[in-house]
Image (cartoon, rainbow, N blue to C red; front, top):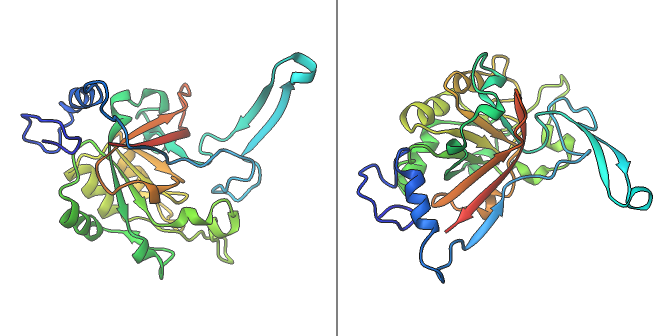
Length: 266
């Protein structure tokens, strides 16, 4: 019996990459009358002109009304938007030449087990806390092994600062940003030992604001592992047992895209 309550002969519990689509299909198509989801949680911030961004410049979103109900009988806007605005996905091509662009990420890597790694206690007294392999070991001691083919998202509590750009970016006098991120060792463990499809966090970046080499980005990119940044509402998602649905805008050749992320709670 796996984490979704489905019997499986697979010995890679709760499921392996190969059997997961079939397991999910069987679970989602149980007899009529069963409750499919207890809850569906939106893990995304809205895209707005006031959304904090890396540069601290205003208006990563710009809109122009091109048709109105009064004048045209319908409503349309033209938008100008940075690919990495608000809650977004970094495609591997963002830091990995020749790797997947946003439209090339396979759909089967966008519907996968959700793991929420809560490190708020470590962050309270350290804005620059780096999530380490020990945090993953502590999580696994309570919840079991991180399943292969998961998206792992760190809950640091930083999204409580959204949309206050000054507090969220937390820049010092020199302009260096300060917020929690992943240590390279944690990314290496999750990608190499746990075969994670994606890493996410509720801050501006999976790398620290002081990083000069973006080591986590570059390590993951050449392995076609995507990143989710500025994730929201993780307080409503369980540490394990939910299904992540990651739905970025399918931009041709995109280095990234705004993304709507859902946690489906069985």
